[in-house]
Amino acid sequence: MPRKLAAITLLTLDGVMQNLKEQEGPLLQIHGSGQLIRSLLKHHLVDELRLWTFPVVVGAGRRLFDRETMPEHFKLTKTEACANGVIMGIYQTDN
Picture 1 (cartoon, helix red, strand yellow):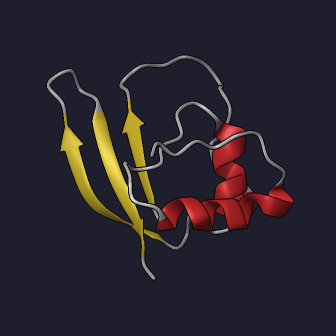
Picture 2: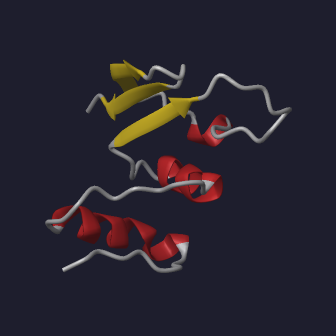
């Protein structure tokens, strides 16, 4: 059965994420939602980060991490470089 994450409040986020993580199925992925990933990081609900670094300059932009969501409990476990210069860093929790 496919897993789906609907709009929910942070009060129920922990229980929903734990329930989803216990189910079989593909990896849960978040693409392009900095606010959601910051909320998940703040509540320690992320097990792995896959950050893609693109060799372009696009301006000031928005920060993915702030003081409350710095992924200090993650460690770099693998890197991959693509022919076009894109680098993917895979970080996993150290607990």
